[in-house]
Image 1 (cartoon, rainbow, N blue to C red):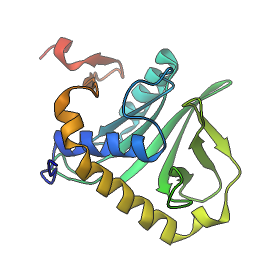
Image 2 (image 1 turned 45 degrees about the vertical axis):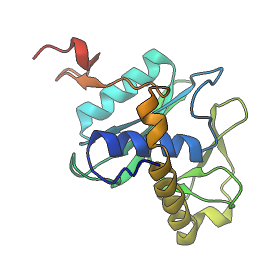
Image 3 (image 1 turned 90 degrees about the horizontal axis):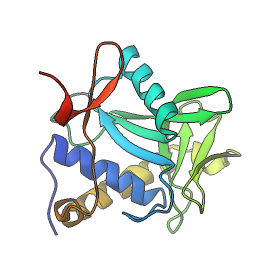
Image 4 (image 1 turned 60 degrees about the vertical axis):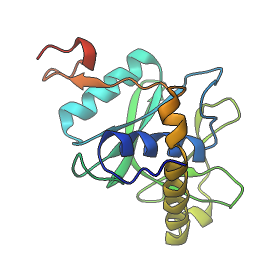
Length: 182
């Protein structure tokens, strides 16, 4: 097992994959690509607008981890970008554990909304369970994500889990890092 304790991109990738797995998605090979996972170092208004635009254009919901500094090993917080009938929603969320053998769910900070990944691999909003509003549910979720992040090193190194790193221009457009002008 490879231990991922250093900060930076490798730790951020491990956390994104760990969250994906703990939400109930397989590591690779889904029939749909309805949700993506990523990280940002700053959740500024232009960044949020660009991610909302990307979700709309790519027709993919997204969960992003926000890191206080590029060298951090765990995110400061998460936000969800989700498609709605007439627009894109952005909301700050926390992972929560509803049971040891059940996938994690995402709950808004005010505990008014709960999201889960269904059997099709699609994000959906469900009724808020009282258990997810307890601090203990969030602490357990953090522990599960951290443990999963420690275990995914070989998968990250194998190249089986594809990543796309993109940069955001000042106007909010996103481009793959390999094609971004200096």
